[in-house]
Image 1 (spheres, rainbow, N blue to C red):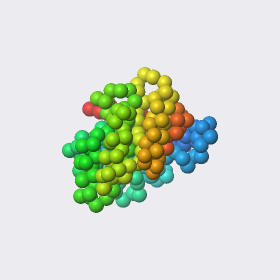
Image 2: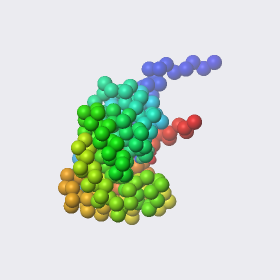
Image 3: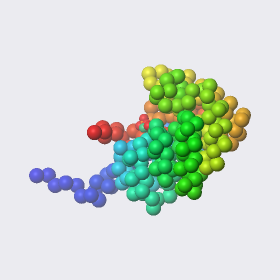
Image 4: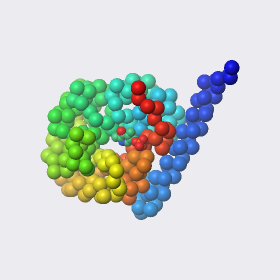
Length: 241
Ligand SMILES: *Cc1c(COP(=O)(O)O)cnc(C)c1O
């Protein structure tokens, strides 16, 4: 029988893997910023750790990651609790049901997926109970199919006003996921226009969350301030059972 690697050896191996992947992603972000004529500090890397264990979050923090993202509350809540000793900013990037607002408000600093007025109300009162303020990004639907999440571009202004009027939310900006099967440059250009229109009414709402492992360059070219990267840092996700 083969001897198993010790836990310490396995941790060291995983740390090396994450460090190499992180360096590659940082190099891609830096190159994309240079190509777009933007300063590197314009873009924040949010590492999306969904399906990967809290131990990976700990290793990432040791490697200098400060912003982590999750897309399911059932998974995020225990992971955030298990790493509460770390100085991390938690980003909730997935679909959010109003009945989960209370739990998400317990750990999320930024919610990227605010897409309806009712959710703004639920999240604001949940944040009030936690005595905190949550930064909310308006998730915009770029494929016109709201069943995939996101507010239609025509309804952004009204939702923005609702968030801005919510006492325990700060309107941070916009977020989008590129539609499947099309070149992302077009949709990201649309998002950039929506973001710029939003800033006319809400000048402090400067965040643009766009770009994932496969399209971060196009997102940075189109003005993204936050890229949400999972696979390129953590590897392929174990399939959900
Ligand atoms: C999983 C996820 C990401 C990261 O996707 P990768 O392709 O693995 O980089 C980004 N944004 C959202 C909303 C996600 O659910």
